[in-house]
Image (cartoon, rainbow, N blue to C red):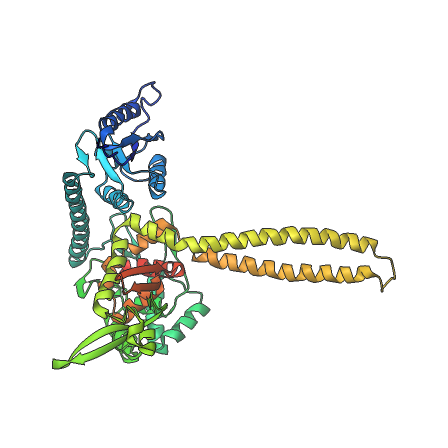
Amino acid sequence: MIKANTPKQVRCAIYTRKSTEEGLQQEFNSLDAQRDSAESFIASQMHEGWTCLPTHYDDGGFTGGNMDRPALQRLMDDIEAGKIDCVVVYKVDRLSRSLLDFSRIMEKFDRADVSFVSVTQQFNTTCSMGRLTLNILLSFAQFEREIISERTRDKIAAARRKGKWAGGMPVLGYNVTDRSKLVVDPVEAERVRAIFDLYLERRSLISVVDEMDRRAWVTKQWTTKKGTHRGGKPFNKTSLHRLLTNVTYIGKLRYKDEVHEGEQDGIVDPEVFEKVQARLNRNGRSGGSEVRNKHGALLKGILRCKACDCSMTPSNSTKAGNKRYRYYVCLQAQKRGWAKCPTKSVPAGEIERFVVEQVRAIGRDRALARESIEKASAPVREQIAALATEELLIQRNLTQWQNQLTDVIRKLPAGDEDSVLLGILADLQDRIRENEKRLSEIRVDSDGLRKTMVDPDEAAEALAAFDELWDTLVPREQAETLRMLIRHIEYDGTSERIAITFYMAGIKSIESRLLAETAQ
């Protein structure tokens, strides 16, 4: 007698959702009806080994327009923990009403090898037709993202070509009306003209920055519609150079390499503006990268070979026709021999384009930007928590030692300088002094770490400008921006995988820079 093969068990989780809380108090509500249909479908698949998990993943009163739902988060956590093989819903829109969110959820399902079934729409990724349908949906999601991005760029380009302000934080010297038009701020305009005159007088960015610090002049202060305060920071060489090269001050607007007449009034005399540009060009403000990085290597100093755990340095070779090819080469491979390293080298143009596109993708997708920022901030939060724990322990010890010190002083006989208690007293005082010093260091370190933290929403708003601004930056500024933003990039030559680790302090640094660039 041949024994039939027992089908593999498929653990099915049922997810239900209702947008409003209306009717949820009823004995049998919409969530119950959804679950009942899903349980019946799972029961019909018992011959395939399907079993229904007892855990309820019910989101009552939550919109499907985002992923901020408690039951959905529990579902995703259990999927990552390997507790679920298949997710069953009544309709696809119960899981998500956003194509972008839906594609993101399905990517996580795919990584965890979890199937997805819609009971009423015959949508089942356990079969080839279901997977085809999924790929079609994801293609439309990608198409939607690209269309939105193109429309946004086209809208900004059309507005700039007509001389209209396209939004963002205004520059020093201007305010924005309710109709998104730039108007001159008389007080700030005088300061802008004074800055231009100061540069022509001193002919040095550093010297002007020092003088501006002495006068306590700061960047544009602005309050967003959400009530967030921006700017008001001391000038540095970068922000000063940005101000001095901004064509907005002569009544024009810049879009990439194009300059158009703007609707706003100019506040700097065109002759003064041209003199400043000529002086900046003679000083080589935008040409320094050719000296320090003559091959234009954007990833110099941040690209590493994962296999050898060492840096990859820019290199180049010239072949027939005098055509130059750029590479990043593993330093260990150079020193120990090419056979020792699986990576060896990687074409510079390809990996640079990939990294830039990843950062641009984050800028286009607010949710992805938030997720990346949260991951980047995790190590900082852990350091702050560790310092807080150490501070608590030191404070407890100090309280204990202070009490002991009081007891020793009370017991110390008057005039008895040879008493053993004097040694205990000195030891306690040393401990207290050393730990109070350490406590001060902890507080300084904690404050420094907190200052590097950024609000995910604000930083996501700033990074949204990255895609628009990247092409307007000169090579030196592009390399500088990447080094500020990225801690390191690991390239695995065996799998050809690239891992990008963002730099929390870098996100903080470029936040104001990118927002200011949006105004140009």
